[in-house]
Image (cartoon, rainbow, N blue to C red; front, side, top):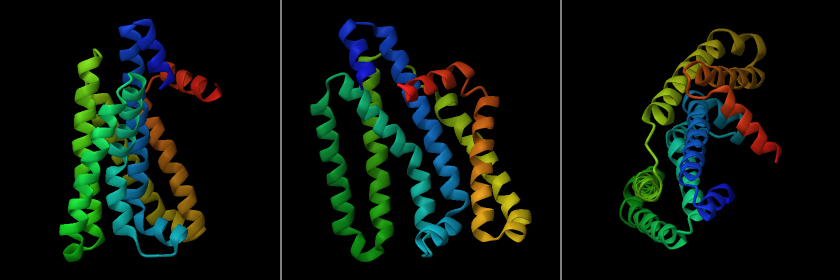
Amino acid sequence: VPAVAEAAATGNAGRRAGTASKAVLFAAIAGFGAASLFVFFPNELGQVIYKQSIGWMLTFMGVMCPLIYIQIVLAGILNGLGMQVFIFRNSLISSGINIAFIYFLIPRFGLAAFIAGWLVSLIIVVALELHKVRENLTLNIAFANWFAKPALAALMSGVAARVLYDQLLREIAGNTVGLMISVCALLGMFMLSVMLTGCLVKEDVRRLIKIRVK
């Protein structure tokens, strides 16, 4: 938010667009990484962390992770551009969709209806916010870097970590320790895959580290 607001105040259109593009890229990478974790290890995470069989719920939540992360970042960009009224309107739209699903569908379909309503509201709000950002910034949608490459990296690393857990680590290290090692392996392979596909370059990593240090 401060970076976009500063660029907006100085009238630097190129810097605004560049900052927004990198913010969405980082959000997409983080979102697809989280999605891979929850989609490929839902039952194990449910048992280890919550002691419950909620794998189906974590799977649906995992699918929504990229949208959730990108929506948060888009809202931050719009905040930096001073569009709080637009964000508030989107919040009302999202709430209205969720309430409709809760009122009409939860009595029949239960918690699945709530998750479905959340997904529908996310898709609509992300589309509206992305359109608004593009109206105010010279921002091109980098489909390959924002979606295709992180999704491919998440799929490859998830499958590899799942096979590693099923075929080796669960028997050798046990469920909990094997899961922890598999999760670390998944995240490591995901970041490596993201860099090998060119989605994330060394300059982006240095920039992200610099932001974190600040």
